[in-house]
Amino acid sequence: MTLTRRAILAGTALAAAPTGSQVLAQTPAAAPAAQGASSQQAPGFYRYKVGDIEVTAIHDGFARRPLEGFVRNAELAQVQQAAQEAFLPNDVLPITFTTLVLQNNGRLTLIDTGNGDMGAPTSGHWMRNFRAAGFDPARVDTVVISHFHGDHINGLRLKDGTAVFSKAEVMVPAAEWDFWMDDARMNQAPEGMKAAFQGARRVFGPIAKDVKRYDAGKEVITGLTSVAAPGHTPGHTAFLLSSGAGKLMVMSDITNHPALFVRNPDWSAVFDMDADQARATRRKMLDMAAAERAQVAFYHAPFPATGHIAKDGNGFRFVPIQWNPAI
Ligand SMILES: [Zn+2]
Image (cartoon, rainbow, N blue to C red; front, side, top):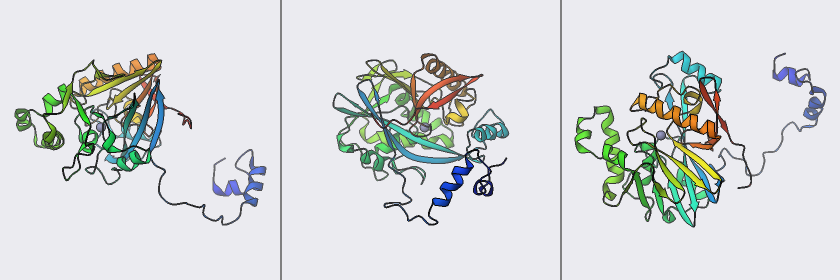
């Protein structure tokens, strides 16, 4: 039996059809629009606890990328098949952006900042959602950056040059700084990569002497330890957030969309600068998350971008958490 509108109205499509058709008969033909109904989405923020630390995921919207050419080492048909299995479009991939806010001992810390006013027209919702969650950019104490790609750093500074988090200390991976702020390397970079070097200078140049560079394997702020996760970029960093028995693996860009790269951890996204190293890092981190049944957060997973990793065949599955109305 196929599930068509006609079959449902005829009461033949579902086992529960007799009551279903009664319900339909009682429904007014034209229900008045609910009060406050509009085409606006609810604000994109979601809170959860890791021990005593309150985490708030803040959504910045999404960007579309053509599937063609997105995975370097798989045929388009295979990539389309993976997209289809996840009920995603077979021509473009919607890539979402979710940053984290940590409230810990009265201090406010951000991990990454979103696209600011420099991203795709379907992004740039970060500040509205951040404020809707009750936060004030002027009260951010620390901004911890995972790597220097524009979708992670551009929220620090508006296009017109204004610093968004006026009193925040900015902390960046030392290895990332050394790579992207090296003028000789920028001058040797292929044309297509120059914009990323210039983007890092736009954001960090005016505060260069104040930016704090952190090493891997260090407690960056209380409860947040940096984990070297190179490959996506040379200094790409993941984090372990822990408080009491609570633990969260902040995966940053270990994978892009989980439907492609958690399922197929050996695939290389076009953004991975060192594909082999990124693959090794990805396998290691996903294996660890699965073995420890740890909660994970990804920057590019569907909102609220947190869940767990299960082993599945030669790859893994991302299992989202259930919405919890309590924190
Ligand atoms: Zn990214």
